[in-house]
Image (cartoon, rainbow, N blue to C red):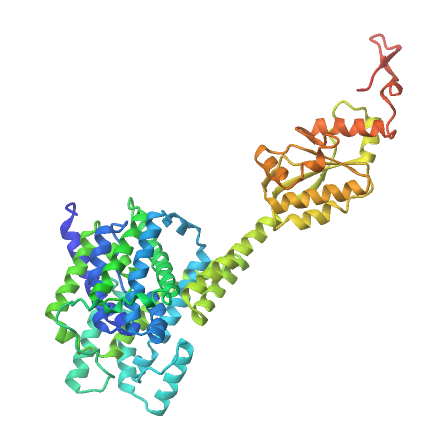
Length: 560
């Protein structure tokens, strides 16, 4: 923090200016009020900056978390949000102690992109009632609420509110393209507030009176009897907080050189922040990707920038609450509409859609589930579909390929005779539940031969299902009078085969061999004992070899 304090202080000031309207807007959208958004930005911003795992992360209320909180407020009331936040904080600390942060890397990029797109759509739709200047209609589904708000606006239009929201959003979007370093969000909100106050325009309801300070609420919100009921929402909040915070920290790492976050410590810091925030009336917090990106772009290099951002917002709470309370809700709706638009990275979406059909399907499905269901279900669905498609792709890599017999030391005639009665297959790739039944179908369609050799040295993965299918194939071929020999079983796979009894089916005649030549010799002995090949004493023949003088010389040579 002492390395470049001036640069960090300037970055913190810039982030605070950007964060102020967002904190107010997300607080209002959550249903707990603008003061809850400010309290969250101050407390979570400071606690997570000190105890988190990233030097550049900025934490506070976010649009994604707001999407989860709205139905909780509607079903259980505002006090339940505080209880849920406290429970989620404890869960995040537990995840940190279990060192679960490293599993974030297993979330596929299409799921993250689809998740972000869905969140952007939900945030934008949530702002429609305030942008149109109508009271928020009742309902839990954002699409239903949006449609009812549009119907209400058609009956009683408020063009001032719509113009205010549209102007703020336009200024932010156009200004960000031309002068990215200028905080157009706060400038647009100030201008909208001044114009509506001076002109006496009805730009919907102002955000209302804020307390002149951050006051701790009564701990009566923590009802022990409601903990069981709120467990599922708390899990959803904790999962979202972990996902968004670690994603934001990863984005910050990617924008810098030499900065790497500690995922487990980041979970610990976010957990402590979410334990502290409810005690001051705030909503659950996460790492904020947008504010973190602003922090990095303005030159932040340490945690001092995030602490400065929290301190400046605290000063605004104590010193400028009366002024902030006059901001029209329509202006904040415009800020969040512009934020939703800027969340959508068109280039990333286009690249993901062009990558593979599977990636495009996962992205669209996750976005649709986010919009129609909720965020946690959307991520679960996206991960499930991504996992199923990945298994399908891996299963396609498994091949059962017929390979020619090794010539070894057999003569051409004997080799041809062996090839008539022995077929060798090489199993390449994984032999697990997703590919096992196709393998069984292919193997049991073997033509009428006397011996089948399975070369297993290239089996990369084997599970219990694959072992059972192999056992079933051996038994089916044995019932047809076909001897099955295997070669090259790896030590780690031998235990799996033995546990399901697959090796037991190979032991009566010692059918398990270390190498393929050994298996071929065993097949040769079997065919000899069955009378298919002549016995060793009858398989000696005369070979005519030229002598140095060119005259023929007959010599008896055994064929081994």
